[in-house]
Length: 432
Image 1 (spheres, rainbow, N blue to C red):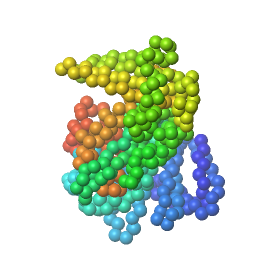
Image 2: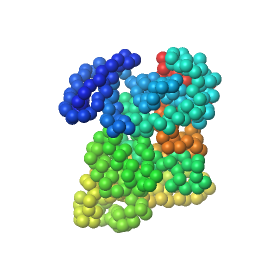
Image 3: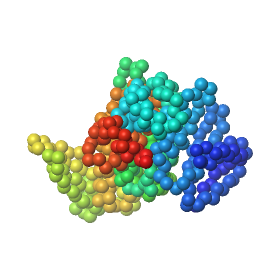
Image 4: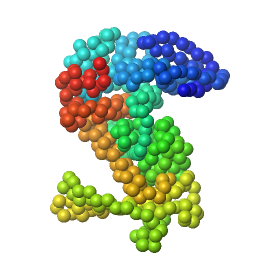
């Protein structure tokens, strides 16, 4: 296996049994690294304040990256003067504390103080308990792109490969504590990618306060390995540029056209009308489910776009199918609700596949956003800027570790058990 990196000068040194190569790019040259199946290479790159790009390439044995290894991979940008705690110590303490129920910097400090012997055993060089101010300052100056790179590297190592539906959706993480208004413009907004089959968050991207999701989505798509996946995005993500970015990444797209794309929605609705089912222009399938006190009926009707006049929808990269998904629900009190959504997709004319993918999109709401709000109280967070973004990534790591745990209790109970019992905590963290 080979990895290509463009380097000019190599600085090698040993640290914690790794070989770290830091590369300062001045004159670009081609450099090829060969390595065997006995080790893996983890590449992290970032830009310093002096605009010099540095590549950190780590070699390690080919085992799943542990939590401690992940913490060691987080770069420390602070001045060494008066530094009492390393970056790995602060990240590990925060991650374990969040796993055990901490939601604020104050909670993290108190948990570390009450469990100091536990942390000292796993961090032999730990000199004391970091204060809530120390934690806040560290995560505020920690560049979000650095931490996100370490996070994505850990996720990539966690799973052998991503397949199936990757649902991308935005969410307001927390409101600005200095603003009296609670509008979306005054809240930190993040776009997350959720692998529904694997049940893990692949990454996140901050939405600029002066922009919207349209600018953040291509950055997230480009950063992730989505080859062979089906990327689903709701409403605002239905853009030609985003469809092009998804296809460039080697994935298929399933985009929902809503009121923000009124003309597109009307065209799709006209081409997948109920009448077209009778004349053989469309394919369709139906599903019925019953559970949780309600009955559900779903139908997907789709038409092969390649058989239509192309000028109806120009500029959509590799567009193959138009679809309509209708859902009806009957509740126990007899109330009936109906919802109809229209889609454009690069998938073939397969109504069962499109219906399944459209349903899996909502896993990002049920399995990620809802749990972040209820279990981790993300909506009530008063953190700001980098601290809020980095803490959100910490919470997502904790969520994924808790989901891996096979204990037959809810998420909130798992967090409590981790806080009560060291053996349960280490089992969830994967620490021997």
